[in-house]
Length: 233
Length: 227
Image (cartoon, rainbow over all chains, first blue to last red):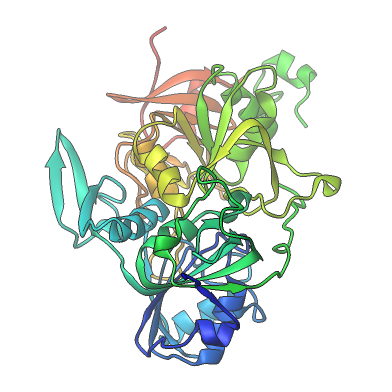
């Protein structure tokens, strides 16, 4: 019987080695696998390279604490600087955290490509800008493109709404974001799921990520991400 | 506040630049029904307030097609955010995709329009909007570079001059570029300006403003767009 469920976050983290590349889903707080990130911090793997859209806020949330721990050597992301990204700013300025800044669509496609077995691709994004410097350039139909390489990871940390024992997943609303593509791009995809459902409970057309991409599922019914109601525009 | 009385005089003393809502409304007038539009964070988002009565589909880079307005407290759905991570609603007919599909939609030319803010726009359509310096502090780029090269049209909405009065429409950008030859049109608090093959072409001006006054606040040669 296939059963990818594990009983604890500590069990879900087993075997993550120093020097690993770890992707984490989420767009800000929504869809962020916060309990798995906390688990990675407690697990204690060092010299990590992280791949995600953002680089944490404040000092309390798990991603900020993971960066502050010194266990992260490098982060690959598109939007490290957001309101309250204090730990990232400090670590980066102190030379303790390397940054690879990647346009958001290029980041997403580099991850998707890895999961799809495509080693590199050409994109017009960032041609002629500081973020395109040093990259191979090629002209197609009179337009200039940059060669971008796939980003493959050792581990992907994914936040899902529903999961079954095969690891079939659904995501809630804009909690989907980077999670489905990261699930495809790592050797070890670990899922924290709000709800564990019976195999077959989610119809085949409703499954967003087939379980073939998933290695471990841990049930974390943590509730909703922090609301972010606008004050003024 | 701009008053119609001040406008009606049409004199230099009476001249008032367009307010931000007026800039957004002026831009919104040029969006036809049926377009799929991505609005950047900040002033561009105001544009969504001025398309009422037309079905315009708003795209958000985090995978929403059919984004509605900001949520009211009683509507709270924390699993829905826009690019600025504010909680938003969906409209009836909305759909959600993952990030790679969202940017494939952008890069693949499926958006009719993207509206962004900018620090500088050059007469050849180059623009700068992601960082004021690569040396100080930590830059963030987000989806700006993808949107700039991917959407069918890129319109910029911004003040005509910087806070200290320097022109933001220039012969050449000085700041790090977001994209080359990407901007089609600029909506400022003073004018609507196309980026044509020969540079900036004035389409519309705030009432009471003279071409000379507009030129004096612009860092590149302006000409009137042929009707």
